[in-house]
Length: 180
Image (tube, rainbow, N blue to C red; front, side, top):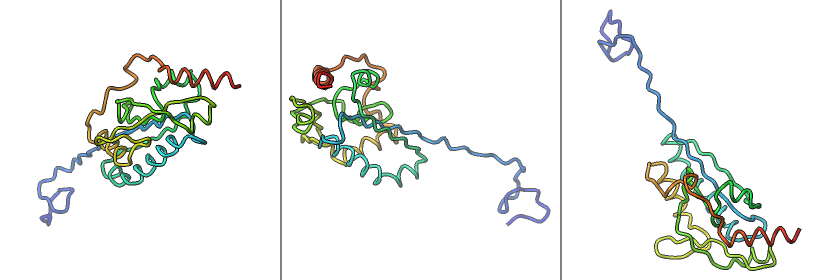
Protein backbone atom coordinates (compact mmCIF):
# COMPACT_ATOMS: atom_id res chain seq x y z
CA UNK A 1 0.00 0.00 0.00
CA UNK A 2 1.09 3.49 -0.73
CA UNK A 3 1.54 5.76 2.26
CA UNK A 4 -0.67 8.80 2.41
CA UNK A 5 0.99 11.74 0.78
CA UNK A 6 3.42 9.58 -1.16
CA UNK A 7 4.29 11.05 -4.51
CA UNK A 8 5.08 7.63 -5.91
CA UNK A 9 3.63 6.57 -9.17
CA UNK A 10 3.21 2.93 -8.28
CA UNK A 11 0.49 1.85 -5.84
CA UNK A 12 2.65 -0.54 -3.80
CA UNK A 13 5.85 1.47 -3.54
CA UNK A 14 6.92 4.22 -1.27
CA UNK A 15 9.84 5.85 -2.99
CA UNK A 16 8.96 5.91 -6.64
CA UNK A 17 10.43 9.00 -8.24
CA UNK A 18 7.69 9.36 -10.78
CA UNK A 19 10.12 8.73 -13.60
CA UNK A 20 8.70 5.76 -15.36
CA UNK A 21 11.19 3.51 -17.10
CA UNK A 22 9.86 1.90 -20.21
CA UNK A 23 11.46 -1.42 -20.97
CA UNK A 24 11.34 -2.30 -24.63
CA UNK A 25 11.71 -5.91 -25.55
CA UNK A 26 13.46 -6.41 -28.84
CA UNK A 27 11.44 -8.71 -31.05
CA UNK A 28 13.20 -11.64 -32.64
CA UNK A 29 12.83 -11.86 -36.38
CA UNK A 30 12.83 -15.19 -38.13
CA UNK A 31 12.86 -15.55 -41.90
CA UNK A 32 12.12 -18.99 -43.24
CA UNK A 33 12.77 -19.63 -46.91
CA UNK A 34 11.27 -22.73 -48.49
CA UNK A 35 12.97 -23.22 -51.85
CA UNK A 36 11.63 -25.80 -54.27
CA UNK A 37 11.52 -26.88 -57.91
CA UNK A 38 7.88 -27.92 -58.22
CA UNK A 39 4.79 -28.18 -55.99
CA UNK A 40 2.40 -29.48 -58.64
CA UNK A 41 4.05 -32.89 -59.17
CA UNK A 42 7.06 -33.36 -56.87
CA UNK A 43 6.08 -35.41 -53.83
CA UNK A 44 9.28 -34.38 -52.00
CA UNK A 45 8.51 -30.68 -52.40
CA UNK A 46 4.85 -31.21 -51.46
CA UNK A 47 5.77 -33.24 -48.37
CA UNK A 48 8.38 -30.70 -47.30
CA UNK A 49 5.90 -27.85 -47.61
CA UNK A 50 3.35 -29.84 -45.60
CA UNK A 51 5.85 -30.65 -42.82
CA UNK A 52 7.03 -27.04 -42.71
CA UNK A 53 3.43 -25.82 -42.33
CA UNK A 54 2.72 -28.40 -39.60
CA UNK A 55 5.97 -27.57 -37.79
CA UNK A 56 5.06 -23.88 -37.79
CA UNK A 57 1.60 -24.70 -36.42
CA UNK A 58 3.20 -26.65 -33.57
CA UNK A 59 5.72 -23.95 -32.58
CA UNK A 60 3.41 -20.96 -32.95
CA UNK A 61 2.86 -20.65 -29.18
CA UNK A 62 6.60 -20.76 -28.51
CA UNK A 63 7.28 -18.18 -31.20
CA UNK A 64 4.62 -15.88 -29.77
CA UNK A 65 5.90 -16.38 -26.20
CA UNK A 66 9.45 -15.49 -27.26
CA UNK A 67 8.30 -12.43 -29.16
CA UNK A 68 9.39 -13.86 -32.48
CA UNK A 69 8.01 -12.46 -35.71
CA UNK A 70 8.09 -15.01 -38.50
CA UNK A 71 8.14 -14.39 -42.22
CA UNK A 72 7.81 -17.44 -44.47
CA UNK A 73 8.87 -17.16 -48.10
CA UNK A 74 7.88 -19.98 -50.43
CA UNK A 75 10.03 -19.63 -53.52
CA UNK A 76 9.64 -21.63 -56.71
CA UNK A 77 13.21 -21.67 -58.01
CA UNK A 78 12.20 -22.34 -61.60
CA UNK A 79 15.06 -20.66 -63.47
CA UNK A 80 18.85 -20.65 -63.42
CA UNK A 81 18.71 -16.94 -62.56
CA UNK A 82 16.63 -17.60 -59.45
CA UNK A 83 18.90 -20.52 -58.52
CA UNK A 84 21.87 -18.15 -58.69
CA UNK A 85 20.05 -15.40 -56.78
CA UNK A 86 19.14 -17.76 -53.93
CA UNK A 87 22.33 -19.86 -54.16
CA UNK A 88 20.09 -22.88 -54.53
CA UNK A 89 21.90 -26.16 -53.95
CA UNK A 90 19.24 -28.84 -53.80
CA UNK A 91 15.48 -29.19 -53.91
CA UNK A 92 13.68 -28.88 -51.62
CA UNK A 93 15.51 -26.60 -49.16
CA UNK A 94 14.47 -24.97 -45.90
CA UNK A 95 16.57 -22.07 -44.62
CA UNK A 96 16.06 -20.23 -41.36
CA UNK A 97 17.62 -16.76 -41.32
CA UNK A 98 19.68 -17.71 -44.36
CA UNK A 99 20.99 -20.93 -42.85
CA UNK A 100 20.03 -24.33 -44.22
CA UNK A 101 18.48 -26.54 -41.53
CA UNK A 102 20.77 -29.27 -42.85
CA UNK A 103 23.92 -28.53 -44.82
CA UNK A 104 24.68 -32.17 -45.52
CA UNK A 105 23.63 -32.65 -49.11
CA UNK A 106 22.67 -36.04 -50.31
CA UNK A 107 20.42 -36.66 -53.29
CA UNK A 108 18.65 -39.58 -54.89
CA UNK A 109 16.54 -40.17 -57.97
CA UNK A 110 13.24 -38.30 -57.70
CA UNK A 111 10.71 -40.08 -59.85
CA UNK A 112 8.06 -37.37 -59.66
CA UNK A 113 10.48 -34.66 -60.88
CA UNK A 114 11.69 -37.11 -63.52
CA UNK A 115 8.09 -37.47 -64.70
CA UNK A 116 7.74 -33.68 -64.75
CA UNK A 117 10.90 -33.20 -66.77
CA UNK A 118 10.86 -36.36 -68.86
CA UNK A 119 14.43 -37.05 -67.77
CA UNK A 120 16.24 -38.25 -64.65
CA UNK A 121 16.38 -35.77 -61.79
CA UNK A 122 17.91 -36.14 -58.35
CA UNK A 123 16.35 -34.36 -55.40
CA UNK A 124 17.38 -33.91 -51.81
CA UNK A 125 17.53 -36.62 -49.18
CA UNK A 126 17.27 -35.41 -45.60
CA UNK A 127 19.45 -37.07 -42.93
CA UNK A 128 17.95 -36.98 -39.45
CA UNK A 129 18.94 -39.00 -36.38
CA UNK A 130 20.88 -41.52 -38.46
CA UNK A 131 18.17 -42.15 -41.06
CA UNK A 132 17.54 -40.90 -44.58
CA UNK A 133 14.20 -39.35 -45.57
CA UNK A 134 12.87 -37.99 -48.85
CA UNK A 135 10.88 -35.43 -46.85
CA UNK A 136 12.32 -33.73 -43.76
CA UNK A 137 10.64 -35.09 -40.62
CA UNK A 138 8.51 -32.51 -38.86
CA UNK A 139 10.72 -32.86 -35.75
CA UNK A 140 13.76 -31.89 -37.83
CA UNK A 141 12.02 -28.76 -39.09
CA UNK A 142 10.93 -27.84 -35.56
CA UNK A 143 14.52 -28.26 -34.33
CA UNK A 144 15.79 -26.02 -37.11
CA UNK A 145 13.31 -23.28 -36.21
CA UNK A 146 13.90 -23.50 -32.45
CA UNK A 147 17.68 -23.51 -32.83
CA UNK A 148 17.38 -20.18 -34.63
CA UNK A 149 14.98 -18.79 -31.99
CA UNK A 150 17.30 -19.71 -29.13
CA UNK A 151 20.41 -18.44 -30.85
CA UNK A 152 22.08 -21.69 -31.81
CA UNK A 153 23.95 -21.20 -35.02
CA UNK A 154 22.72 -23.77 -37.52
CA UNK A 155 25.22 -23.63 -40.36
CA UNK A 156 27.02 -20.89 -42.21
CA UNK A 157 24.83 -18.30 -43.85
CA UNK A 158 24.42 -19.20 -47.50
CA UNK A 159 24.62 -15.53 -48.52
CA UNK A 160 28.23 -15.47 -47.29
CA UNK A 161 29.30 -18.39 -49.49
CA UNK A 162 30.54 -18.57 -53.06
CA UNK A 163 27.98 -20.11 -55.37
CA UNK A 164 28.59 -22.72 -58.01
CA UNK A 165 25.38 -24.24 -59.34
CA UNK A 166 25.39 -28.02 -58.88
CA UNK A 167 25.49 -30.08 -62.08
CA UNK A 168 22.16 -31.70 -61.23
CA UNK A 169 20.39 -28.33 -61.20
CA UNK A 170 22.17 -27.17 -64.37
CA UNK A 171 20.89 -30.32 -66.07
CA UNK A 172 17.35 -29.75 -64.73
CA UNK A 173 17.18 -26.16 -66.01
CA UNK A 174 18.80 -27.04 -69.36
CA UNK A 175 16.33 -29.88 -70.04
CA UNK A 176 13.42 -27.70 -68.90
CA UNK A 177 14.53 -24.87 -71.18
CA UNK A 178 14.98 -27.19 -74.18
CA UNK A 179 11.38 -28.42 -73.77
CA UNK A 180 9.95 -24.91 -74.22
